[in-house]
Length: 49
Image 1 (cartoon, one colour):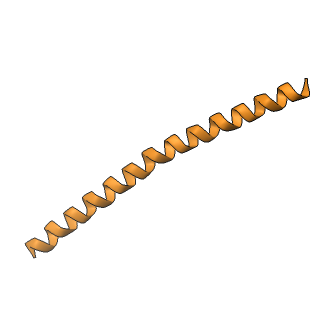
Image 2 (tube, one colour):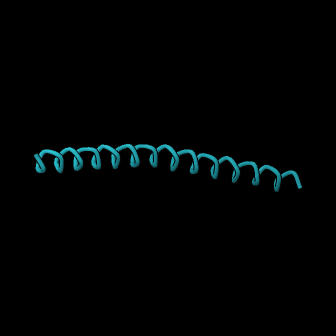
């Protein structure tokens, strides 16, 4: 019984670490996509002038 609790704690720790890593990488991806869209919008404005 004690071993099962230890295993579940380890599994929970790994799952939390993976979710945290995925969240952090998603923030960078969204931030980069926002910058790309902003630059595309600026290019469209320059082309329209």
